[in-house]
Image 1 (tube, rainbow, N blue to C red):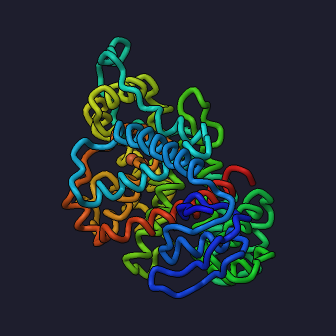
Image 2: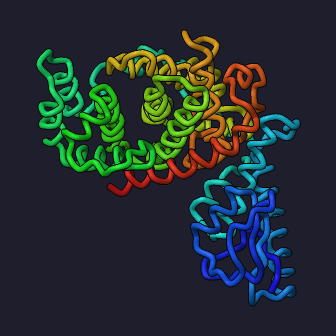
Length: 415
Ligand SMILES: [Fe+2]
Ligand SMILES: [Fe+2]
């Protein structure tokens, strides 16, 4: 028998002694075989160790050593893209959470997750400007005209039309949604996910409309439609899978953060997060040489990509996001929150927009998907204060978001 830390317990281990909470209340008896539920309960109750049968101390010691090695490796990976001065505030807390996430990826041998964490090598030399046009493009040239990549699928407009009709009903909306099997399937999966957390399964679109509400359902339809609007962008310009992974991560985090602030109408945060960087996808396609040069410059000087875009082409992807969402007639507050994610103070509602700014910063720190920004800029203290989030809340924000991100990614990419 031997003491095993809760994080290293596994199903089927037998308790060699009674297990009690830190307050001394016995919760499981000696001889009990541990289930996954027991182990997660122990974490909730803050129980750090359990005495289990059949584990020798030698083996435990070697496990501890390998844990220390993993933590050391994860520390140097995460340190390499975090700001060097973290203080003891939120930046340091997010650093620790990312370090734990990275250690988990190492232990699970998750090579995809790890390569996202480590793909940020700084180029040896400053990228050359050779081949870049001398004249800077004008933002009015970016959106408009005959640009097929910017059009939303017809289904979105059909849904909007039926929602705006004075005689619309859950049934009439469901009929329109039902004409698109891909949209129907994803919407049903989404409303049945932990993200919405309804206690009973929702099996029909009309029931989904009735429960989720017409406005929310049109938002979800927009989310799904937006992704298909960018379906045909060639991977030589931008890896759209990685792009959407970052966007979904940002959307989920924004929504979780907004629910912490007890903002009553928080459904627009997920959409604002999902849409916040669409301007970047447009820039990759419209100005591939500027953007590939910009990515190199951003890595070389460890600068945020939006800042490099402003210097290089005169405007940033936030402004392009604004133009595109405006042309799609996406309403406020989604439009403003998404477009000002790099400059919340310029938006009409800086407090709410600062939540999306923080979600974006945290999404970059988690390294789920890519936003083009490899090195994290220092966490702006003024904007952090504006969010109203407490440092102590970050761990549960992180945990809650991580579970939902996984589920939403599965829905969007596997359905
Ligand atoms: Fe951005
Ligand atoms: Fe972003």
